[in-house]
Image (cartoon, rainbow over the protein chains, first blue to last red):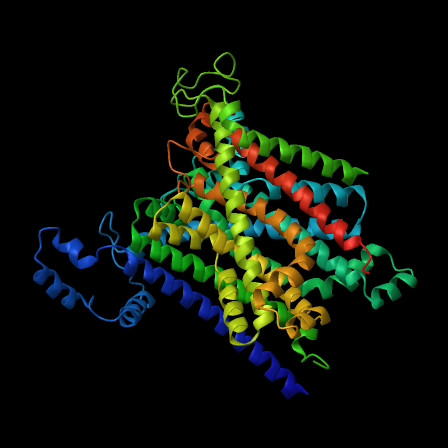
Length: 326
Length: 268
């Protein structure tokens, strides 16, 4: 029995990791095709319009551009795996060196938002499940649906209008650099973090509420109810442990989405993160920087989603077992 | 009762916005790209919503912006539905390697963040109305595939489809006469949700400057253009943003109603 259980988990883990890797490989190939499909290649760009065809051809050979597409992809992938995405077309710096400090800023932003939104939205969702059908449940559902209909930049600008323009409490532009003090960071991050919290909360709230209510339909809960155990005790001690795997998954999925949501929020607050770097690079068609940012964003997103699935299974003992009769 | 009011309200709002978008050239008091007022003219005699930084009438620009947003939204969502649904039905009927291949491709597509993928593709192909619509359509088609594929699998195992197959009818006939009509309710609800996410998506892209290019602007682009006015205490950038939110709210309201309406109906 234990052997079967172990091998079932192992094959699930292996399959899930493999599918995550396939996704990352796919995005890397797509990103690589970007350079391959662009009109003109590095050789013509380096030599200019005046170069003779023979000269261009010899440089192409020297650069390996005459190799088949697949070979060039593998070369590119090998370099990329070593953190070498080439140099930025706009300032000649290595794309990776431009990106790393920006990535750090983006992670700080997304992580601060996650630390606030997860406990907050999970407890509101839990409370809504306890008070199902009561005013609190209806109100929290309505408010969170309202935020879901708003574009994220609108939430950001409403916050700017209220807190930066009307009350002058926080800055409208969140400029930070390495030398910024801790209080400076908090001051600059408050509005963007608050925006991200409002963007992310509705999904977390909805899933928590649905997960708890889903468990509430089971027989053992009915049993507990007929025994006369108060509803709040049933939810916290009987339903919550079994809803845990959905909640752990949603935490990871929320982090994954927060990492991507920063792209728009950074543009609203001119925050120097990786999202802003990527958007600027797209506008200037600075392909190496776009490639590096694109691969990194996607990889983080894919890995966090993978963790969501893996942790969800590991937390729920029932999912660890092979399905009966299947 | 409350939900009925919400649906009727949503329908009114939606039709008003679609009408405003369709009739934008007639309704707009001045051409959207013409500089007719002093820069940042306050709301009042110089247009109901005032003017932007270049003295263009905000009301006219919002009406035309809505037109751009809705055209792209409807085009991309319809195309996405067509791609997703036809591939799902074909997979359900053909099964085998075609089914596996398409299924895997959509799995990959769904596992990658859409806005990042769109940024990469648009950086490579360049931004135009066509690339925008196609990129959005392909990205969104995965949801229609995911919704339709199980239904198509169930339905293609039904007796009446088998009978049609035995009658020697071709694949295309099977698709459109036997299978497709049975999926309309759930697809319609999905279409509604797709409209709202497509609107948010194109607005985000335009807001980032990767959507409709100036001097034309859709609702997201208008927010971008006028963001500076906000720091001066003007609310104008919030008007196009509010239009996006209202459109999504009304479309979501109708889609929610469709979902509950069709799921409540007893199966015959």
